[in-house]
Length: 373
Ligand SMILES: Cc1ncc(COP(=O)(O)O)c(C=O)c1O
Image (cartoon, rainbow, N blue to C red; front, side, top):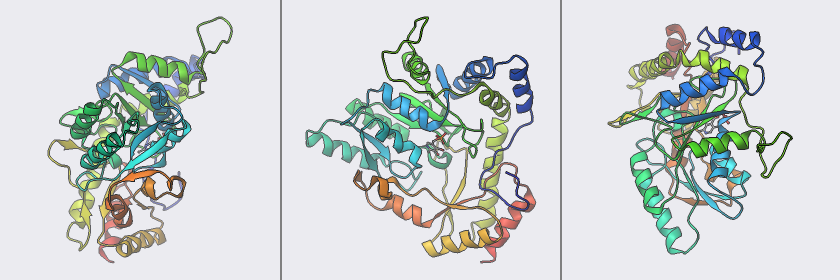
C-alpha cells in the first residue's frame, strides 16, 4: 500500500519477523492449510484471549458463519445482531437462511443497547414467535460492548452470544479480553485490522466441541475415512499456513500495536478536544479499548463532510462510521428495534487515520488541517 504521500486509514504494519516465519514455512514445505505455523498461531491466540481453544480461518466472516452453523441456525430462524456494524457481522445470518433482527446502539460505547435488546426479546417472547437462535454484539472500533448486561439478558432467555471482536483484539472489559466473554468469540486479521495475516479470522471458545466442529466444517466436513466421505455440507474456510506465519510475526508486536493505537487516539484527543463540535468516545470505567480506529463525532453531517473532503483533497483517507445495517438497502425488510442513535452516529461520525506507523509529522499535518477549518 505504498502511494507516495498518501495517508491511509489503517494500513498493514509488519513487525519485521513475519518474513522469518514465512521462510521457515517454505523451508519445511508447509505451504497449504495445515502446518506447524497454524498450530502455533492458534495456541498463541487462545492463550492471549484466555479461551481454551481457537481455530484460525480464512476470514472473520467465515468464523461468524461457522459459529451460526454450529449453533444450529437454519432456514426460518432469526438471529439478533447489532445494527451499527460492518456487513460481515450480519451477512452470515442470511447465508444460513435465517432472518437478522437488528438492535440500535447506546451512546456510551456506541454498541448494542442492552435495554433495547431486552425490550426486543420481551416483545418477541410475548408474541409467541420462536426466540432468536443467537445474539451478535460487536465491539466496534475496539470499544467493548456492554457485555455484562448483554450476557445477563441472553442468559435469561438461554440464547448463546457470539461476540464479534473482529475489531477489538486486545480490548478488555473488567480485565476480560474481548472474544472471551460469549459462547464464542470472533476475530479478524483482515489487512486493516490491528494485526493482519493478509486475510484471515479466528473463532475462539472454551467449548472444545465447538472448535472441533468448526475445524471439521471448515475442511469440507470430511468424515474419518481413507477415501473422501461426507455426511454433511462443509466449507473450504481454513487459513493457509503462510498466512498463519505472518500472524506469528504479528503476534510478537501486538502489545506494541495496541499501545501505538492508543497513542494515536490520545494525540488526536489532546490536539482536537478544544475544537467546537468534535467529541471523542471515552472509555467507561472498567473498559479498555484497543482504539483500532480513532473515531470522532462532529456536531453535524456538514461538519463531518467538510473534514472528510478537506482531508481527501490532501490525499488523506478518513471514513464515515459504519452505516447501520437496518438502513442498508439489502436489509430493508429486516426487523429493527431501536430509535435513531446509530443513524445519528453514522451521520456525524468520522474515522481518522489510525495507522500504527503514522509519525508525529503526519499526525500533526492531519490535526493542523482540521484545526484550520
Ligand atoms: C465488526 C466486523 N465484523 C466482521 C468483520 C469480518 O471480518 P473479515 O473481513 O475478516 O471477514 C469485520 C472486518 O472486516 C468487522 O469489522
